[in-house]
Length: 230
Image (cartoon, rainbow, N blue to C red; front, top):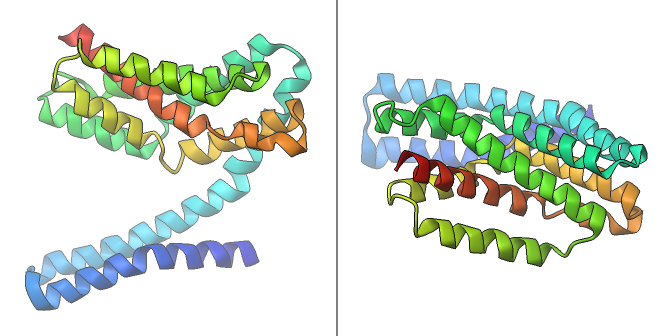
């Protein structure tokens, strides 16, 4: 019960400043029609309720299962299996990520269907899945994070010189939206779970860095998509 209260408090503290600011602007500067203003109020209430339920779901479902999967995988003593499952989990969680869906729908709309919703979603998912697999390999073989980041961003800058200009901002936005409320809790819990078994409780910090790596994948995959479409 206490955890639920904390989640409710967290949601209120997150939404209240924005709602108060919009209300003040409504009666001092903006002066929107009242039907639109009441729709905003209704939207804030529904967003707050949805965010509250989502956070409760994350804490009672996604975080524990991610940690349990991460702790169970190393016990198979099959590095290839850990890497493959990391790829699959990274991809399917990204497909479920609401932020990715929003970006894909906006790009689909702006491009008049030239870049379809599903193509962008699956391109981003493949990029995240690949780099989650790389992160699993990094934990297994104890590869320093900085070297993987250097190689990843070098690939980004090289690809940028071949990618059509319109795809470059989309690719970096894709890297940002993958750090959303669905993907981040799950892959962090997965990484910490794997590291806690392979490196011991004292080295669970090795499980961090997954989000940094996961955000590179969509940038590269969307740039490759741009080269193909270009």
